[in-house]
Amino acid sequence: MSAIDQLLDPIPVPRMVKVRQAFDRPRAGNLEEELSRQLKESGYLAKIRPGWKVAVTAGSRGITDIALMLKILVKEIRAAGGDPFLFPAMGSHGGATAEGQIHILQGMGVTEEFVGAPIRATMETVQLGTSANGRPVYLDKYANEADAIVVINRVKPHVAFRGPCESGLMKMITIGMGKQKGADFAHMLGFGEMAETVPAIARVTIEKKNILCAVAILENAYHETARLEVMGKEMIETREPELLKEAWSLYPRIFFDELDVLILDEIGKDISGTGFDTNIVGRYHTPYASGGPKITRVGVLDVTDKSNGNANGLGILDLTTKRAFDKFDFEQTYPNALTSTVPMSVKLPMVLKNDRQAIQAAIKMSNVMDRTAVRMVRIKNTVQLGEIEISENLVPYASKHPNLTVTGEPYELSFNSEGNLF
Image 1 (cartoon, rainbow, N blue to C red):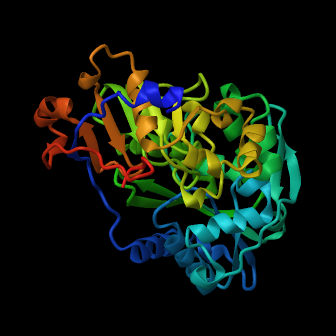
Image 2 (cartoon, rainbow, N blue to C red; image 1 turned 30 degrees about the vertical axis):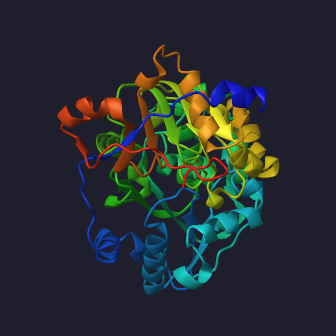
């Protein structure tokens, strides 16, 4: 028995209870009807001339209905006389390679066969000019050559900074459409400047390029499309801050303000840019964002297969497993840190041999005198928060909370012969 085994084997793992979390649940309804209706009624696509090449952004975030919405956009652009194509608009993701970015899209169901249009991927860019705050402004080569551009993205809080425009349309224009080179210059002075830099760069692209329209997506706490809004390019900067406030009102959370231990089953790029939503966990990799619960120790057990070896976010947490560590691909992960200039996200936490020991280590280091009284929550990831597991001692609190419903009896966590959860 190793020294680690001797230290951790006696640590008790609390019995857990399943709990359902309730959030407001507005839903958009029939997406094809709604998006098609807004596109037609707005008249933005009527500006298309026959044969125009129209570039449509395809980002890397795990937006639930993105493949379907891109398919609808392609259909409507073609019906208006345009010749649409998709281009990966995702900064340095996919290992900052064209092939890697196509692979990310395929993992989200965004394929040429499904959307009905070609995907043109390159890391080449064209400089459009310089922003008012002195940043060079870059645009994807294929998008620059197109006759028009349509931008689509989800509007939500950012995981690393606060500002009127965070993770949404303006950021997509600045960083996604700017590819690795644009993302690199946008991040050069760090996240402390990002609230100013994102709109400053986006303004140049909006002014210089024929952006037909933008589609803003709002999601509810269940990761479903709450509603869509189509707007002209002149409306993006003024409308997005209002949509961001609405996004905050729909945002999911864990309904516990203080915990000793939080266990995430998985993190990944398909979940969040930092692998997990820092706003939900209350752990941040920059000093320019804050909020969320106070949690002493946070551990993660795995990295999603869809993340393709990108283990960005591990460094923000305290513990992980050998299984997750073995998926850590430097070539996929480090370009994010090198571009964002934030090394914390890609540091290594403590690595334990299996799930049981990762959980036991988190409990041991939670600074609770009576380890049987540890307040622990387990979630699958920061997207799927409708059902969570809580330690037995949190049941009295959960039973009285208006957003929580206890749905079962206490049970022991089940580990296989390798010490991993079933």
